[in-house]
Image (cartoon, rainbow, N blue to C red; front, side, top):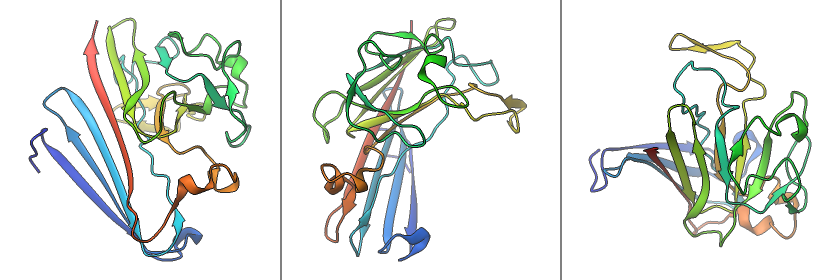
Length: 226
């Protein structure tokens, strides 16, 4: 469809009551817009007929050097987040300052610099950062640059956190468009609610959607070159 911002496509999914163990019939929409300002805008919303958990994310893999061009380890990343939530199988610990840790991206640095120090098996990042500023307001989340091509992607969003994943589990078994996706071939930056919030009393209400309410989630990717 054509909008005032640019061409867009809207997807709808209706999850019936009890699907995957979640209560309520959930109607969810995701709209992708290629704006006239050289942006990819993603708008998500959902409604339900029973109280249920909602935390929709956008899980694109990015490699600004181009498709099949190798790893993202030399990409330079800035995360506008002074704290993250530690964890092993799931990143859900208490808010922890990033200063002095491998998780400090407050100043741009190559992703590969501290990747092994971040731990994990396989090693890499798969953690949630708490984005600076007020949730539910659009604000800077991340800035990613490929130093070879000069391509830059910036992300704004209105969620409390962003999950940063470095493709640790890519093992070459997936292929597409003539390329083989090996470890660290792409990265994900997913704005979202803090993982496991339903089991954290101080965060529980953030992820529960009730009848009469509308879940909303917005993120904008901007593309430039230097």
